[in-house]
Length: 260
Ligand code: ATP
Ligand code: MG
Image (cartoon, rainbow, N blue to C red):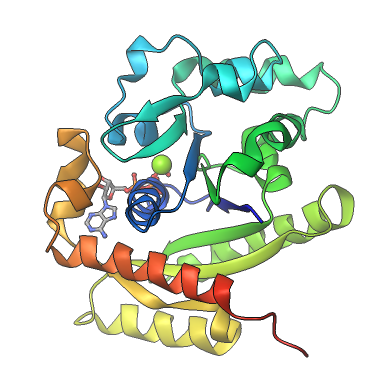
């Protein structure tokens, strides 16, 4: 069964794209067939996969508007060894253009249905907003991964996100689950980060991934080379953390569903 994961948090700069790119590369390195969907007009996941966003023949925009299929619009990221449905700033217009169309929240889901069986994992990088693009991500996904920095305001934003996920579940996608919360850019010497991390574990228990992503300069540098960190510095702490996260996901998927 294909795992379709939306990587989302309406807060900006928390590590969504870094997580999508490096998790995709780590899963691909573990022989998984991966499709990455860039749902952000910033096109950072596209650039980070070594694809120039200014030079696209087709993108997720054409797919959302129904002008292209995913099979037509996807390209291969040789740098990451996964397939990519890329994005660029053209996507910013989609929000307005989608409003007048039917099934505007489920267009990505409908398009994905045709190709999903070709993949083990589909990872969707969402923009930093709870908008129609993110809604398309949440409708297409089976579960949500929430990257977050352990800082004071993080918990506040989290309740808005959890409420949105609840609403999507009642109205559009009853199967949507929170797959997990990922602590990113973590600095264990920071007392506040440690406190927020403890609170997260109290509230969300085993929904918090065991893997913690440390603050690591190699992760920040890799996009400027157009490669995931795995192919920039394999032994760096950041690379190793994302390999461990991929291992945790694969391990969770292999466990029989808990009987409650
Ligand atoms: P946006 O909301 O704008 O889409 P985002 O949530 O996708 O942002 P990223 O772009 O992944 O966040 O990360 C924001 C910045 O922090 C980037 O410059 C990235 O390189 C850097 N960064 C992300 N994770 C780490 C990390 N673990 N260590 C060091 N730098 C990081
Ligand atoms: Mg991003």
